[in-house]
Image: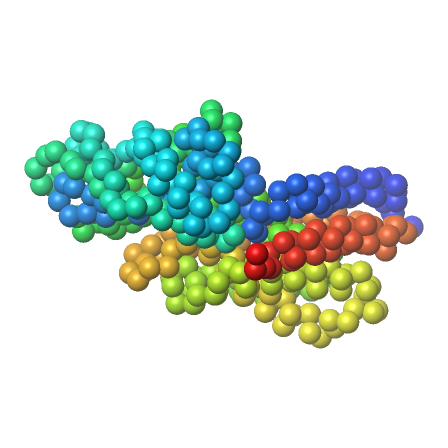
Amino acid sequence: MSRRRWPSAVVLAVVLAVVLAVVLGGVLAGLVHPAPAAAHEATTTAHAEVTGTGANVRAVLDLEYDLLMKSAWLYAEAYEAKERTEQLRQLQINRDAVIEYVTGRFAVAYDDKPCAPTTVGAADVRVRGKAAFAVLTLAYTCEGEGGGAHAISSALFPDAENFVHSTETIVRYELNGKKGSAVLVAENPTLRIGERQASHQVWEFFLLGAEHLLFGLDHVLFLLALLIGARGLRDLVITASAFTAAHSITFLLAAMGVVEVPGEIVEPIIAVSIIVVALANLLGREEDRLGKWRLPVVFAFGLMHGLGFAGALDIDESGSWELLLSLLSFNAGIEVTQLVVIAVLFPLLVLLRRTSAARWAVAAMSVPIVAVSLYWFFDRIPLPL
């Protein structure tokens, strides 16, 4: 009985339509929006750390600088400022407009009574990855006796402003002995301290991890490059396991503040990791220069990718062990999504290898990956002005 063969034209059409769409989409995204880690071109994440004992609280907000200045409806000279000195000057000049915007969209209540916000000190600017974030400190004066409950709400950077979409606000809190974290979104914008169950927190950070992998184009391209170079299911399982173990180790260590490597080092190396693996695919199986070093190389690069994942949460202060549940949930979201990507793409690649166009298709997929990664590499190298 002859073995049934898949029509080459059909397989090639299906595979290239799916896989090359991802790659070419990556090319366009990389060229049009070369953001750090290319993870948040169309959205943003706000960060809030809320602390306090008794009724009054203190909130430290990290908000993407240029987006904040646009949302406050300031002129281009404000949101286009690139130098830290000029950004600080613009924050000072436009202090009232910025504070009005932030306090109008980030609120704290105590026993359902709104707390009155006031600014504490001058605004600061710090870098997350390669994006500048404005750091604002607010003190909230709340009326009420001890024993009440706080509620934290965020409507920062909504879709209606048309600058970004699907904004998430990661809240870390330590209020009256209760510590934890939550992700606030438009559909669920309020955190009532003490009411959310642990299962809800797990699900929030699981989804955040899944989104970070799917929208983190460099991580997706690295995974795609690994899939293209896998010789079979066993080779794929071993390689993917090494990558998973490596980035899980450094993700947890970095997010807990045990290991700290500047983003200026991590981001270019992540780009290099994609280039190396994609080039190895172009060399072909017989000429694969990585050879027996493929697994150690993948593991080493996985360590760097873990540091990149940790940058999404930026949890690095002492005492972060209370946030371990959030970290594990975030990592689980990454891993499950990674498995889904593998489950969808690998069977298509297996079918492709049964056609005469296999070698050409590998080159067609690998060349754009190398091109985009080279662009990211040079874009991420911190050059003195």
